[in-house]
Length: 539
Image 1 (cartoon, rainbow, N blue to C red):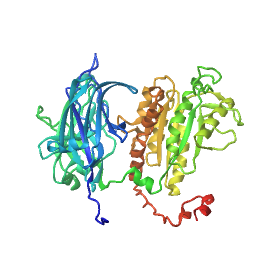
Image 2: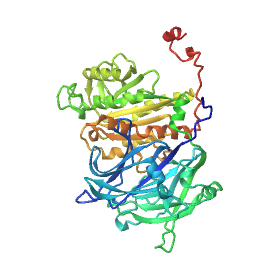
Image 3: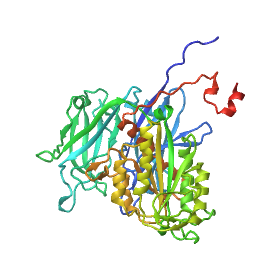
Image 4: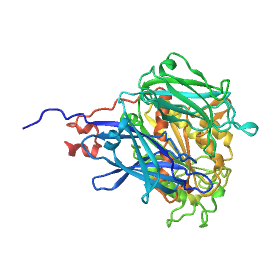
């Protein structure tokens, strides 16, 4: 008998919040740096990697703010495994232990709070706590930027506090659930944190319910110093209350003020919404040909033309470009060089922005075109210096301004490959700050073994960039040293591109650009979407 009834709505999304307690310490001079990785078992009984939390330094009792969104399918066994590891470096870790269970077991636990022993080689190495929360599909997105004013200094005479903020949902059970944590702003009592978004239902079930904000002074030892806290609600913030005094029970007076700016609540628009609406990602590549790379004819040069193995520039391009090019309709990539004399041009001055193709074309076709053009160009360049980024960023920014004027649904990703510290840091920061309202992300991959510590300034992970009195409205730079991932190209690509989806959404929101409604095609008229050579065949 035919069943015309609709299938039951049994598939819901739930969010896992993770904590660990009493982890075994695997480090000698400090404490473990734990991270949790989640795996699902497929039909072939193989464990498939699903995702991972952030790393929490020097902490045996971590509360992770990175969560996992999973489907809850009541009638099936969804076998999952949590691996708890101690991170020793970008590609090195030690196993603390793991927990195997099912999604159903977590959902069936009392108050959806699952507690289990972490085990390694049959020995208990700590406790894992998983709290499950149902995801409300009708969530709104809260966008805001937080700053601090005259925060308490817990570092004494020899420094200033390194503040961060933590946001907690107050549950009916009385417990506080960590739902978001900002970046750390180093040595600053008047910090400005990067703008961020959080779903309203993660903060509170109803807008008149309070959530809690805590301010802490980060310490390398992991023993953070408490600055102060307060409670408020989205209802109060919507009504115009945007300044809050911090209070510490151990102090008689307030310990600082927190201020909200750029506050808004709206639909939760995602990166996928923009892709479905036709937004196209275009990649541009700029390669460093300064003299510090070494003579390309020598085997110790970072530009040595070998294929066994390929040099690090070649490997970085091979890892990153194919992923972005999946979203690039025409596969044409503007390719530039900088920091060299160009022998096929009339000028013998050092150029800090030149097309790498000897044919004079800025664009090459696909990853193969990038790699072929790169190796061919090496014979026509005199490596020189200094290492200046500002000219190339200024050039690409001008192209992005043309895109804005044409109101095109394009977003540019500039991939800069370099071997050392830049010499025009102030000008580079100025160009980045000026580009904050442009459809642009900048990815910098550090090649070789140089000390890239100063390059981290551009990343914005320790606060918004500032230049000549102007504060960047968003973070558009990601820096990754190649040496940390040279044996794991998949992980390199993951770290290099991790921030791009959020950067695209932040830009679109900043310029108030909504995603286009995805066009629905008539499947009986495929000629609308097929290339011309396939139209006749489809008919």
